[in-house]
Image (cartoon, rainbow, N blue to C red; front, side, top):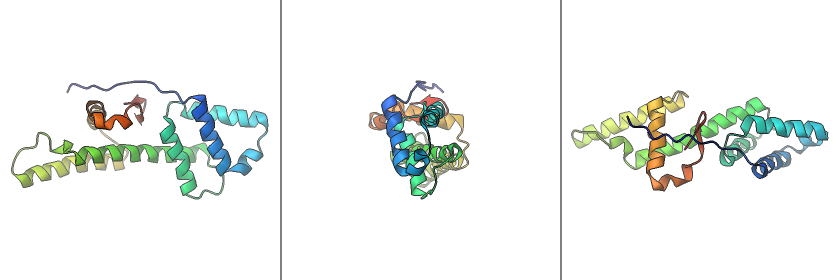
Length: 168
Protein backbone atom coordinates (compact mmCIF):
# COMPACT_ATOMS: atom_id res chain seq x y z
CA UNK A 1 0.00 0.00 0.00
CA UNK A 2 1.48 3.30 -1.07
CA UNK A 3 0.66 5.64 1.78
CA UNK A 4 0.60 9.39 1.33
CA UNK A 5 0.21 10.37 4.97
CA UNK A 6 1.25 13.94 5.51
CA UNK A 7 2.76 14.61 8.88
CA UNK A 8 2.66 18.27 9.68
CA UNK A 9 2.74 20.22 12.86
CA UNK A 10 0.23 22.67 14.15
CA UNK A 11 0.60 25.06 16.99
CA UNK A 12 -2.30 26.90 18.51
CA UNK A 13 -1.46 30.57 18.11
CA UNK A 14 -1.85 33.19 20.84
CA UNK A 15 -4.94 34.76 19.30
CA UNK A 16 -6.72 31.38 19.13
CA UNK A 17 -5.62 30.54 22.66
CA UNK A 18 -6.99 33.81 24.00
CA UNK A 19 -10.31 33.31 22.18
CA UNK A 20 -10.70 29.90 23.81
CA UNK A 21 -9.78 31.19 27.26
CA UNK A 22 -12.19 34.14 26.83
CA UNK A 23 -14.94 31.71 25.89
CA UNK A 24 -14.27 29.63 29.02
CA UNK A 25 -14.20 32.85 31.02
CA UNK A 26 -17.62 33.85 29.67
CA UNK A 27 -19.09 30.42 30.30
CA UNK A 28 -17.58 30.00 33.78
CA UNK A 29 -16.99 33.53 35.14
CA UNK A 30 -16.95 32.51 38.81
CA UNK A 31 -14.04 30.14 38.30
CA UNK A 32 -11.92 32.85 36.73
CA UNK A 33 -13.05 35.53 39.15
CA UNK A 34 -11.44 33.58 42.00
CA UNK A 35 -8.04 33.32 40.28
CA UNK A 36 -5.26 35.80 40.97
CA UNK A 37 -2.98 36.87 38.10
CA UNK A 38 -0.42 34.13 38.70
CA UNK A 39 -3.10 31.41 38.93
CA UNK A 40 -4.67 32.67 35.70
CA UNK A 41 -1.27 32.69 34.00
CA UNK A 42 -0.66 29.13 35.25
CA UNK A 43 -4.05 28.00 33.96
CA UNK A 44 -3.45 29.52 30.52
CA UNK A 45 0.03 27.97 30.35
CA UNK A 46 -1.32 24.56 31.33
CA UNK A 47 -4.16 24.84 28.81
CA UNK A 48 -1.61 25.68 26.13
CA UNK A 49 0.69 22.85 27.21
CA UNK A 50 -2.13 20.30 26.97
CA UNK A 51 -3.77 21.55 23.77
CA UNK A 52 -1.24 23.47 21.65
CA UNK A 53 -1.07 20.77 18.97
CA UNK A 54 -4.83 20.72 18.32
CA UNK A 55 -6.58 23.00 15.85
CA UNK A 56 -8.84 25.80 17.05
CA UNK A 57 -12.00 24.25 15.60
CA UNK A 58 -11.72 21.00 17.56
CA UNK A 59 -10.88 22.83 20.81
CA UNK A 60 -13.83 25.14 20.32
CA UNK A 61 -16.09 22.09 19.91
CA UNK A 62 -14.53 20.59 23.04
CA UNK A 63 -15.57 23.68 25.03
CA UNK A 64 -19.02 23.81 23.42
CA UNK A 65 -19.62 20.23 24.49
CA UNK A 66 -19.04 21.22 28.14
CA UNK A 67 -21.67 23.89 27.84
CA UNK A 68 -24.02 21.52 25.99
CA UNK A 69 -23.80 19.20 28.98
CA UNK A 70 -24.84 22.18 31.09
CA UNK A 71 -21.84 21.72 33.35
CA UNK A 72 -22.48 24.01 36.28
CA UNK A 73 -18.82 24.25 37.27
CA UNK A 74 -15.66 24.83 35.30
CA UNK A 75 -14.66 21.50 33.71
CA UNK A 76 -11.43 19.86 34.80
CA UNK A 77 -8.78 19.03 32.25
CA UNK A 78 -9.89 15.40 32.48
CA UNK A 79 -13.45 16.42 31.52
CA UNK A 80 -12.11 18.60 28.71
CA UNK A 81 -10.03 15.67 27.44
CA UNK A 82 -13.13 13.43 27.33
CA UNK A 83 -14.94 16.07 25.30
CA UNK A 84 -11.93 16.46 23.03
CA UNK A 85 -11.87 12.74 22.30
CA UNK A 86 -15.59 12.83 21.48
CA UNK A 87 -15.09 15.82 19.18
CA UNK A 88 -12.27 14.05 17.34
CA UNK A 89 -14.37 10.91 16.89
CA UNK A 90 -17.24 13.04 15.55
CA UNK A 91 -14.85 14.67 13.06
CA UNK A 92 -13.61 11.30 11.81
CA UNK A 93 -17.18 9.94 11.71
CA UNK A 94 -18.16 12.90 9.53
CA UNK A 95 -15.29 12.14 7.13
CA UNK A 96 -16.09 8.40 6.99
CA UNK A 97 -19.72 9.22 6.18
CA UNK A 98 -18.62 11.45 3.31
CA UNK A 99 -16.38 8.66 2.04
CA UNK A 100 -19.33 6.26 2.19
CA UNK A 101 -21.69 8.68 0.47
CA UNK A 102 -19.15 9.19 -2.35
CA UNK A 103 -18.84 5.43 -2.90
CA UNK A 104 -15.36 4.91 -1.46
CA UNK A 105 -16.26 1.59 0.16
CA UNK A 106 -17.60 0.28 -3.18
CA UNK A 107 -14.24 0.66 -4.94
CA UNK A 108 -12.84 -2.69 -5.98
CA UNK A 109 -15.95 -4.64 -5.00
CA UNK A 110 -17.07 -7.19 -7.55
CA UNK A 111 -20.16 -9.30 -8.00
CA UNK A 112 -23.84 -8.64 -8.48
CA UNK A 113 -25.33 -5.33 -7.43
CA UNK A 114 -26.56 -6.84 -4.19
CA UNK A 115 -23.18 -8.43 -3.48
CA UNK A 116 -21.41 -5.12 -4.08
CA UNK A 117 -23.85 -3.32 -1.76
CA UNK A 118 -23.28 -5.98 0.88
CA UNK A 119 -19.47 -5.74 0.57
CA UNK A 120 -19.72 -1.94 0.78
CA UNK A 121 -21.88 -2.20 3.88
CA UNK A 122 -19.44 -4.62 5.56
CA UNK A 123 -16.42 -2.40 4.83
CA UNK A 124 -18.20 0.74 6.06
CA UNK A 125 -19.59 -1.09 9.10
CA UNK A 126 -16.14 -2.38 10.07
CA UNK A 127 -14.71 1.16 10.09
CA UNK A 128 -17.65 2.45 12.13
CA UNK A 129 -17.30 -0.40 14.62
CA UNK A 130 -13.60 0.35 15.07
CA UNK A 131 -14.38 4.03 15.49
CA UNK A 132 -17.03 3.35 18.12
CA UNK A 133 -14.61 1.08 19.98
CA UNK A 134 -11.87 3.75 19.85
CA UNK A 135 -9.64 1.31 17.99
CA UNK A 136 -9.42 2.49 14.38
CA UNK A 137 -7.03 0.20 12.49
CA UNK A 138 -3.90 1.81 11.02
CA UNK A 139 -4.94 0.84 7.48
CA UNK A 140 -8.28 2.62 7.92
CA UNK A 141 -6.51 5.70 9.29
CA UNK A 142 -4.32 5.73 6.20
CA UNK A 143 -7.38 5.36 3.94
CA UNK A 144 -9.02 8.36 5.60
CA UNK A 145 -5.92 10.53 5.37
CA UNK A 146 -5.23 9.54 1.77
CA UNK A 147 -8.87 10.18 0.83
CA UNK A 148 -8.65 13.69 2.27
CA UNK A 149 -5.36 14.38 0.53
CA UNK A 150 -6.57 13.00 -2.82
CA UNK A 151 -9.94 14.80 -2.98
CA UNK A 152 -10.13 18.57 -3.43
CA UNK A 153 -13.69 18.60 -2.04
CA UNK A 154 -12.18 17.54 1.32
CA UNK A 155 -10.11 20.72 1.55
CA UNK A 156 -11.81 21.81 4.77
CA UNK A 157 -10.30 18.80 6.57
CA UNK A 158 -6.76 19.45 5.46
CA UNK A 159 -4.48 20.73 8.25
CA UNK A 160 -6.92 19.51 10.89
CA UNK A 161 -5.94 17.25 13.74
CA UNK A 162 -7.24 13.73 13.13
CA UNK A 163 -5.22 11.15 15.01
CA UNK A 164 -2.43 11.18 17.57
CA UNK A 165 0.16 13.51 16.12
CA UNK A 166 -1.25 13.25 12.58
CA UNK A 167 -2.74 16.15 10.72
CA UNK A 168 -4.00 16.03 7.21
